[in-house]
Picture 1 (spheres, helix red, strand yellow):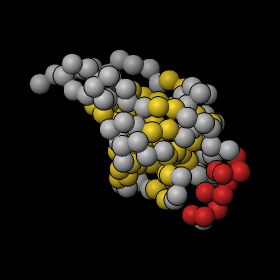
Picture 2 (cartoon, rainbow, N blue to C red):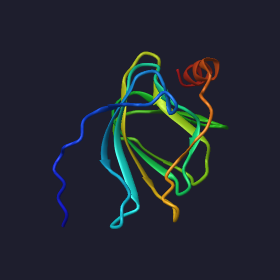
Picture 3 (cartoon, rainbow, N blue to C red):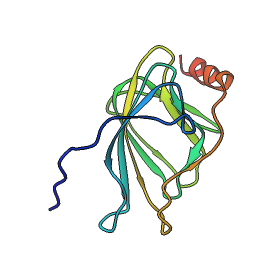
Length: 136
C-alpha cells in the first residue's frame, strides 16, 4: 500500500483548458506505479472544458450539482452518482449547466508516451447554449 497525505492546494483551471471559473484538486498523476491520472474538478455555473480527447478514454464520476457532457453528436445532462465513460479519441467537453454548479472526479489513463489529454478549441457560447437548451 502507498499512502499519500493531502498536501496540494486547490488550483484554478487554466483558460487554455476551460471557459469560466473552474477549480481543480489533483488526486493523482500517472507515475511508474500506475498510468491512472485523477482530479476532482468543480465548475461554477456556465463553466466548461474546451473540446478535448483522451488517448485511453476518460471516466467521469459526478459528485455534485448538474452538468452537461457533449460529444460532436450528442449532449447528456449529468447528476450526482452518474458515471460517464468517453471512448478513446472521442472529442468531447463537460461542465456545469448555466444555472448550477457541477463537480466530478475525472479519471484517465496515460498512453505509452505519458499523454493523458489533447486540448482542442473552446466551445463557443452559442454551441454551449444550444447544448444546454437541448437538455432543458
